[in-house]
Image (cartoon, rainbow, N blue to C red; front, side):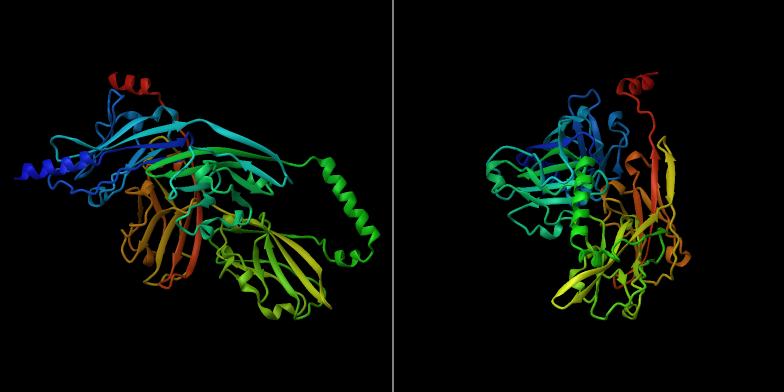
Length: 510
């Protein structure tokens, strides 16, 4: 009877075998080969196997009841593959393959067995492409078009995502008919992106980026989620500076206007003022951005702080919280009594390296039915992040230091994230609260015992490689979800010399 049950299970698997195509550009951090199984997991000796049949040593990854068994793994995949730790419980047998290269392009098979006959769950064709389009525009242009085209008449439930991950992961634009995507878009690109009308019908998924600047230069990835296939195309945008001749002409025109219109001089009188430079270490509870003037500021004056992003995000607006950008919500403070001459300094809580920017303090004073700019002052903020450096040559582990700077309540939650906002480690009430942990960090992170008592929130990361070279953030929340402290550390991993397959196999046989 038991053998009959196993036969039914394996028959169910084979009937649901599907062929998928997954495309990715060479140089991406990772690619996910999906394998979802909805049948019954064998009770005895369940084994999931990923193979590549065009290799002499076919094994890519093997997961058994006792965990990963990589003794027979092809060495070209060494330390590059991972599966969910609960794969045999959830039926999600998907495989993550790090730093895909063109030599990884092939057909992969995901199989399940009970230790006897092996049956295929799914076949996947992985295509690693080196094709990328370079788009060059001049700073000040009205727009730049990032091309992305695929087959026409896509399914209406297909989703298109434009992302950028060359600095930090940013969601540039999302097109979907099945969900509201506006809130998902990074604020840096709000109101600056658009796609052609009815792109799923035409297959033209190109993105128009308005008013490109030097800060927009970098790699963009167009990802199409089509049925069960995942297709990716990469575009590199290069924004060149304007020629100095044109800049000088614009400045001369401005100077003439100022001279001709003497009234403008009044409004520029306090406009150009020397700025400040503030440098703080990551981990401080708050930083003050100074802004002091020597003139009286009426109570009804509008005080506004903005940053130097392309959209000049509102950091603080007096008495108008709804105008404030979400990045700065609940993080700024200016005491109203400071509006009596002339301290308009702003306190910014829990600064991180992403807050390193130039901030502008502006004061608008209403004169009759018109408002005029009375003063503008700039403050440059630099948040320094300590560095930890290791060599990627088999180092067993590295410690990312983080010491508590506040008293930690019993219900505190400690969360480590990387610069792509992925969950690296979570500690709350118990040390293994890792359901939200990103899969590349599974079984690789550990914190010390009793961190809330000792105040040592340091994180140990095992077997670091160059892929782990990022900025990591340690954030502590109280039971209500309010931030208590935030500290960062930058991990630099110096790469080692990679051996070719022939060298690796030659060393083995030797």
